[in-house]
Image (cartoon, rainbow, N blue to C red; front, side, top):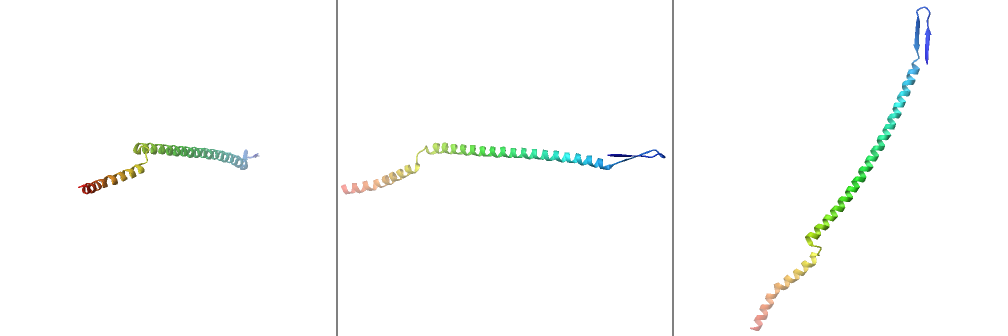
Length: 115
């Protein structure tokens, strides 16, 4: 809204209403705020998507590492022990060792009894 005041004695004088300027500025500020909120929501959505993608990637990487670790553990076990239960072999060799360790004593007793 513009108001014009005309004077006859000294020429023309013009007075402008500041209300229209303030309203224009407020409208412009409101548009800027709306644009900022829109941009903020877009950035927030982008961040959520990136976070979701990162979490999925981390879960996939963790699963793959666990599978690889299990495979390596199985290969190592196969290479070192050959898939055989060493405890049973250890027990068998212990019994053989005890048996062979006592044979000379028993043979010596038998030889003395023969003589």
